[in-house]
Length: 117
Image 1 (cartoon, helix red, strand yellow):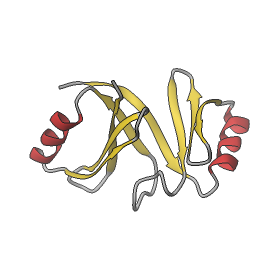
Image 2 (cartoon, rainbow, N blue to C red):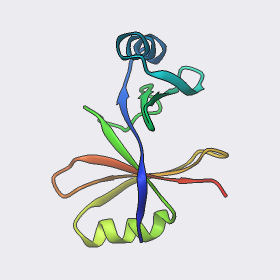
Image 3 (cartoon, rainbow, N blue to C red):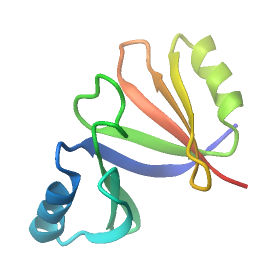
Image 4 (cartoon, rainbow, N blue to C red):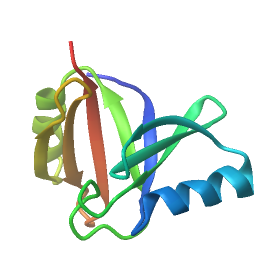
């Protein structure tokens, strides 16, 4: 059971396209991927920073959400729960992959991501 990398960190945006333009102009981040105005992922060096629309973000989200890329969501889900965390949601994103949203024992939100095979 290993974490391969931080897949991205995302913030919530009421107007993701406008917010993406801010990050591109203010810091020079470049467009990596856009799913219309639902999810816009920008390149920050070798890392990714994304803006999620309210429908794509995490319910009750405030602040940034780290997303860790893993090979096996279910193995990690069991570990999270056995260590006092809580699995909040599992979501299949088709060709993109699958996401598991969880909270740590203090209620901080994070996600695990696995790519589609």
